[in-house]
Structures are given as structure tokens and as C-alpha cells.
Length: 100
Picture (tube, rainbow, N blue to C red):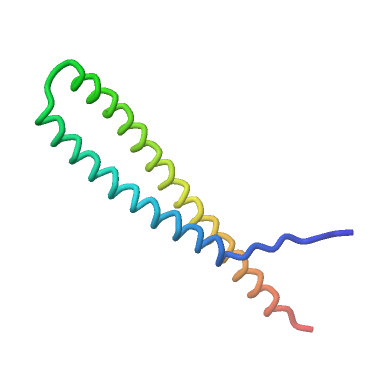
């Protein structure tokens, strides 16, 4: 017995929008954290300060990579939604062209 695959692009688009909104919030928080770290660095000297700054820089770069990966994921979600919509439109045109 055959089945079929049905894809609704509305939830995909909604998920993409939710992820994009959360990612924007993360970007804002990262920028604020970076600014606060610069302020802290101007007030704190010594080996502990340097070690902390090095670790923060490492963590910050990792977070930047995560943000970039999520941006790529969002683009892939948009591409998938666009392709599904294009396919649905093509199928609808083919069906409407059939003359019985």
C-alpha cells in the first residue's frame, strides 16, 4: 500500500521566524556581554585578568561560530520552504493543464 508525503510550509516558516528572533536576541546579548567585558578589562589588571580575557575570547569566538551556523540553518530552512512552494505551484499548474 502506497503512502504520500505531505509538507506544510507554514510551520517551517514559523519555526524559521522563531529561530531567527531568538538568534537576534542572542546577538544582542553577545554584543552587550562583549561591551561589559571591555569595561571589566579596563578596571581589572593582572595575570587573572589576562587568563580570564583569553578564556572569554575563546568562548566568544565559539559563540560567533554557533551564530553563523544557526544563520546557515535558517537559510536552509528558507530554501526548503521556497523549494516546496515552487514544487507545489508546478504541480498545481500541471494538474490544471490536464484536460479531461
